[in-house]
Image 1 (cartoon, one colour):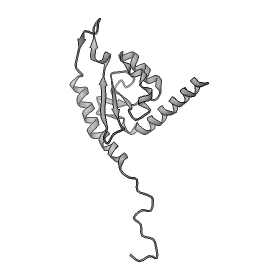
Image 2 (cartoon, rainbow, N blue to C red; image 1 turned 180 degrees about the vertical axis):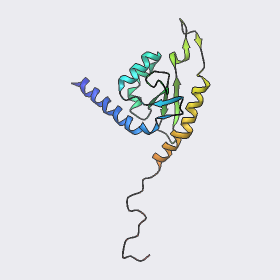
Image 3 (spheres, helix red, strand yellow; image 1 turned 180 degrees about the horizontal axis):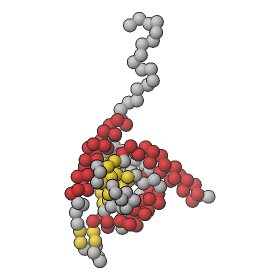
Image 4 (tube, rainbow, N blue to C red; image 1 turned 120 degrees about the vertical axis):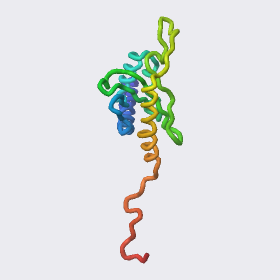
Length: 155
């Protein structure tokens, strides 16, 4: 029963996180930002890319969402994983990793850099999509009818 409750809790957390951050999905025509829709998406991403994102369900649902960076023509295929902290005054990147956290080789002795194309895409997404969306979320909501004069009162 406890496991079923936890499963339902994570499912609801993923659904609400997906709905909240769905407007942040974006493409430049070559790469795209995609949101995971369920915990299994993170597990699969971690297995394919051989890094630890599979265990980040709790963080994903509590203000530090995970985004998948994919090739636009193959959005189902893992490429890079991006995590953003949305809990502060402004969003900031926690991590961006590809296969093996950029380590490879029999003993993970080789290291490569994140491709410039991926880094520039993520930076553009942050400037053009993430920051404006975040600022809009922080704006106080205007109450319906605010700013209207009541009829029959003197100005």
